[in-house]
Amino acid sequence: MKARYSKHSSSSSCAGFTLLEVMVALAIFATAAIAFTKVAMQYTQATSNAILHTKAQFVALNEVAVMEINQEWLQGTQSKQITQQGETWQIDKSAQSTISPNVQRIEVQVSLFNAESGKVESGITNLVFFNYKAKV
Image (cartoon, rainbow, N blue to C red; front, side):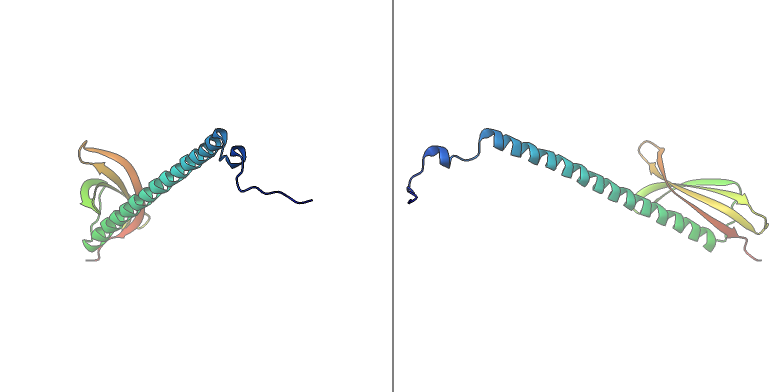
């Protein structure tokens, strides 16, 4: 038995996708696009937070270095605003005595400072170090 092939096929066999198939495909694509957008936004936000945290850590380390260079002995607490790393920061330092009278525990908290509102937005990082009295 010979198969017959015609050069022209009927319009029903050449038809493309049905409207329903196209709409299902678009729905799947839209769902995937929304999921991808959410993941991309979370990645961007996480990267931004990591950069901000790293900058705050550098600010805290710089403050510790300045205290060590100046051989600063802190009494009680101290707060100040500075601009470093392209941001305005509030640095809060508090001193606590230790067993040794020549050593103090210093806690440095670095927060993001909003200069427009004049308020601290959020604490970014904490750093604890031990300060030694300068020998005279």
